[in-house]
Image (cartoon, rainbow, N blue to C red; front, side, top):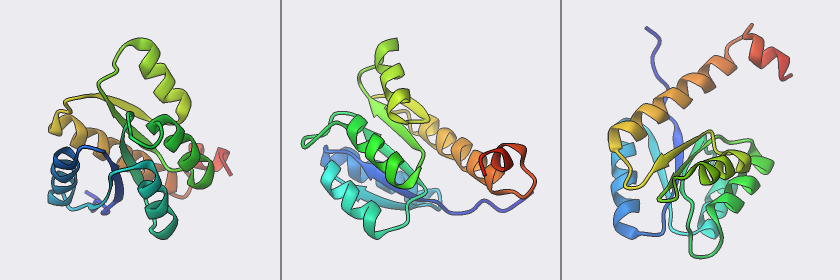
Length: 139
C-alpha cells in the first residue's frame, strides 16, 4: 500500500473553539493545519503557504465562505470541504457551484470529516499519477 502524503489543510472557522478542535483533529491525523478565523486571514495564509485543501465554514464574519472558495479556486484551483449548518438542497448546490468538492453538516462529525479529507487526498493523488486519464485530459 502506498504511503499517504501529508496535506497542508487551510481550516477556516470563525468560532475559536471549533477552529482549535478542527485544527487539532487534522494535526492528529498527520496533516498540517493552517488555521484562519476570517476569510481575509485565510487568503493571506493561502498567499504565503502552499495549501492542498480547504475546510471552511460558510458563514464567516468578513465575507461568505462561498466567496472565499470562489476566490481560492480561481487563484489556486484548491479543493474544498464546506462545513455549514445550512443543509437544504439549494445550500448544498450553492456550495458546489462555489467550488467546494464536498459539503458537511454542522456540527461536523469528525470521522466523516477525516473520511472526506482522505477521499479528497486519494483523488488528488490519482490525478497526480502519470497516465491517469482524468489528469491527462485536463492537461
